[in-house]
Structure formats: C-alpha cells, structure tokens
Length: 393
Image (cartoon, rainbow, N blue to C red; front, side, top):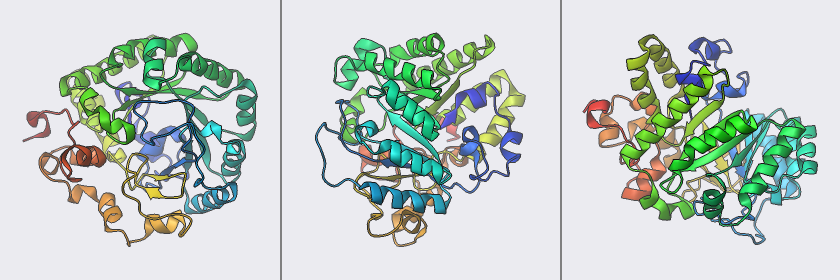
C-alpha cells in the first residue's frame, strides 16, 4: 500500500512511526505499513461463496455452497494461532464474507484475542442489524468494494442493483459508527470514474478509499488487455494525487491509498522532488520503511480450505495447509524454498528490476503479475510504468 494522503499531503511524518518503535504490536493501524518486524497482516478468505459475479474476482467465487471450507472450530483454532504469532490484523474476506452465518462470531473471537478485525465486502448484505452487531463486537473497519457509479459498477459486479445495495450498506455502517472505506479496482472500464469516486467520498463523508491496480489472477487473469497502459496509469495516479491534495487543502482530508503497484512510491517521490524537495526526503525515508511489496512477508493469506498463500492472488502456489500445520509454523519454516525467496525477493528479481535504483523502495513490485504475463516469477512486473531514465538504466 502507498499512502497518498500520508505521503503526498504530509499527514504522516517519519517520527510518527519511530515513536512506537516500529513494532507491529504497538503501531496504530494507519502506521502498520512502516513496521520493522513485518508481522503479517493475514487475509482469511472465509468462504468462496458470493452473491455477485465480479469480472475480476481472484477467488473464482460463485453463489453455490462449497463443502471444503474451514469450520467455525477450525477458524477459531486458526485465530488462536495467529494471535499467538503476533498477527496485528485479520482481514476477513471471501467470496463474500457476510454469506457465512458465523462471521460475527469469528470476528468477535479475533477481537477477544487482541487482533484488529476488519472485513472486505461488496457491501450488499450489510443490513442495519448486521452493522449493529459488528459494531458491538468491536469491528475496526469495513472495506466496501465499488468500481464506479451505478451503471459501471453493476456491469463490473455482474448483478443489477449491486451499487444501490452497497450504498445502503455504507449508510448502515456509518449509522452504526463503524469506520468504512471504499475499494476500487482500476481498469480501462472504470478509470474515468475516479473523479466520481472522490465526489462520493465527499458527499457521503466516507473517510477512506483504496485504489487497487489490477492484478492478473483468478477471473482477473483474463483482463490483462483491459489493464491501463503505462501512460494511462501515470495519469490515473496523478489524478488521485491531485484530488487527494484538493480535499486536503479545502480542510476535508481523506485517507487515500493505492495498492498493488509499488511503482507508485518512487513516482510520488519524484513528483514531490519538483514540488516540495524537503518533504520529498521525508517521504523517501517512509518509503524505505515501507519496503514495497510484502507478499510472503508482511502479508499472507489463508484460503477457505486452509491453504496458505503469499497473498490472496497467488492461489496456484500453496505453502501448506493449516489443517495439517499451524500457520505460524508454515510461515516461519524453511521447508518451502519459494517462501524463503519471497522473504528476500530483492536478491532474486531479474532484468530491469535487478538494476532499478528503486528496488529498496519498491521491493520488486508484484511477482504474481510478472509470472502471469511472462511465466517467470522473477521477471520485471509488466505493470511497472517507470521509464528506464526514471529507474536509472
């Protein structure tokens, strides 16, 4: 994650992270990306079932029951292990997590064990009653996916009415007092909707938005040709920075992040070098703390069937199953050489990535995207939009 508001607008300073010793267990959620120990944020896809038909779904979710999902007891055993391991945040996702009837019970158990529980949802099933229940158990945050306004979103989500149902879910969260944010996956179909998403943040007083770069995984693997060109990506990132600054300067700051393309970090830094050189140097120190992509190190994934992955997009490479071995042992063990390589990926990247002057900032960007396009997991990420001159070649 690249915190546009944190870095570009100066809402976070290097001293903020240092004040907490940069330990995951002590850092507030908005500073976790700057931790030094990199205890992983764990995404648990608690179900593969979903009531929508999103064209970019990394999980190939369907609206049918699946018989291989972890039980409530197995889920609580997983949570016990994650809490003991020091995992700071458990992100409950899917499919659509709200189709699981025991979601509140599992989220409450995670909170009782000292973790921050957050939910990633399409928002269409958040009734007033459910929002009230989740507030009572101490849910930290609800991330709701919208990929444009009504026509674009419903086309992308594959179900008419999804947009209006999601807006109702947002309203229900806000009424219950749950912090809510938007999740938006950028592609050729919806890049023109970015300004309207910013308008919606302001109109509904939504405090946070994450703009996700497209990852070629799951059903999204068929959308490579629908990804933005490098020039279009640069324009989109510039637009996001411009609109973030505009809100900040008008006294209406929002937390704005971009996700899944760590070229955004150097790009933001180079822009600041022209606009505010002193701030640019502070941002560079924060970017080095962040260390770029952390798949297999600062983020991990447990699937509905117990398989453990480097992140939620890498489902063709499992490191083990929590039904056979605890997550903590799988994550710290040396039995899988690829997991070991991911923890030190800067040693293994090839081509432009190996020569890039931003390698310590970017961390080699998204390996799963490189593999999807080239077949070589250590090849340069094809979505990196920095020029040879910018990367120092």
